[in-house]
Length: 161
Image (cartoon, rainbow, N blue to C red; front, side, top):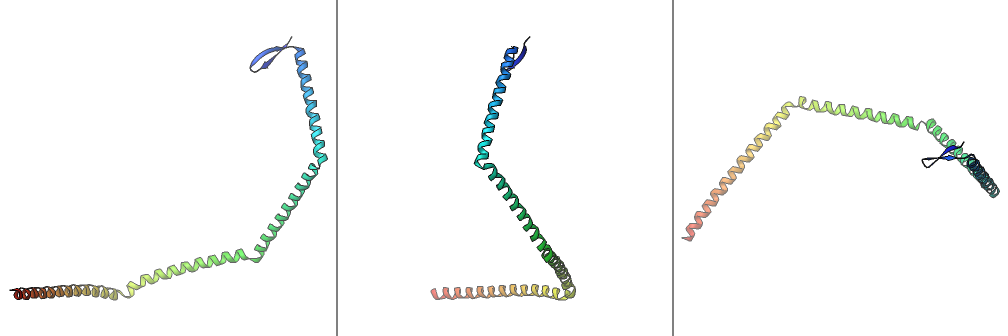
């Protein structure tokens, strides 16, 4: 009785002899790969690559540890020197002062119209009067110039005749 073997989607009958032969091939492949792996390990070990790799990993670990210690020490120095705390306090004080300044400015702006409503009104009236006087003066000057120009034309006409 043979079992069925699937080859690329087709089921084919396989005999016990074929199964035994397939197992032998697999065993030979395992031996060959095992032998190659053993030789490769011997070559790597003999070349000193494993020792060198281990030393490199150790050096990296030591460097990482030293760096972590330095960072920790720097953080402790900053904490102990109160630099961060002093900076935060200065920022808070600055913000408070700015707030007070804004409030004083608002209060002053509100007080000006209350303290000088007559002054504001007077200035406005004065500006209106000055504008009217300037317009009147402008019109008077224009009229005088026109009259002068007309007189000059008349004289010029008389001289031509």
